[in-house]
Image (tube, rainbow, N blue to C red):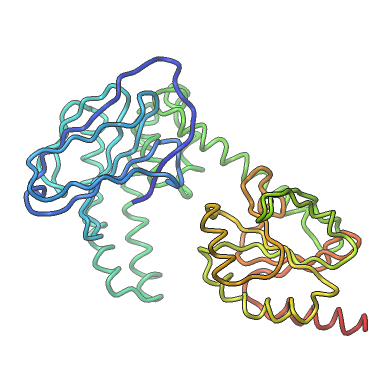
Length: 358
């Protein structure tokens, strides 16, 4: 469960909502309560509360009085036993029963969603079971179909209830292809209602995808490399065009990308081999600043580094969809080579390039 963050607020002043839990597992098991603002679709920022065993009642209180939250409650053992609630400003909700068979008082939306989630439970249990023996074959022929069936149950509710706030909340849960298919069918009342931050995030996503496709069509060897300025490790701005006069290898990476980390030893070797004629500019994507700095230090990366903080979003500018991706920029500022994923092509190209120049 992951969650959290920014955004659109309603102009009214609301009281903070809260949820009272009285679940039978609370007497013997540790439960986790994860929450984030509904506007944070990627759940990058979240609050995680722990309900320790021995409590008969636990109250979760929202951290904001202006934006709806997504609240997920589940077992600390990592199984698929969990359920999700929407908490609006001013809501006073009571949840009883068990994690597998919960009952909701004080919220018609959550009572309705409880029934949808319970209909998904057989698929969740199947996914939990398959996950313990997952292979590529099982994933393709059993795990993925079960996941799609689970989401189809929720999508069917959306399809039948285009004027229901719950439908928009469900789309934030299942996302994927369902947003393209079902978001346009929702009424304007729903899109501008209590869950408007979700609709706004979807609309922003559509615009980003459109821009990505536009940039992808432009990206080609021989074009002028799009210029950008990002902050370097020392906090100073570094501009790509300031590096002209040498070949520059743009390395799009992230500490979360195993393949990116796996490339570092070979990249180091080639940096040492050709650093008098080329520069490497590491562009970290989707890491927090501390994580980025620690990764550069831990892997002892001797070249230049900047962090893509979305202002501008350089990975969008270069239409990066695969990590790692390396882009070689020639001394005149034109794209000479684009290499996606782990591949010897980059190193073969550099050897050929610089041996020819010799």
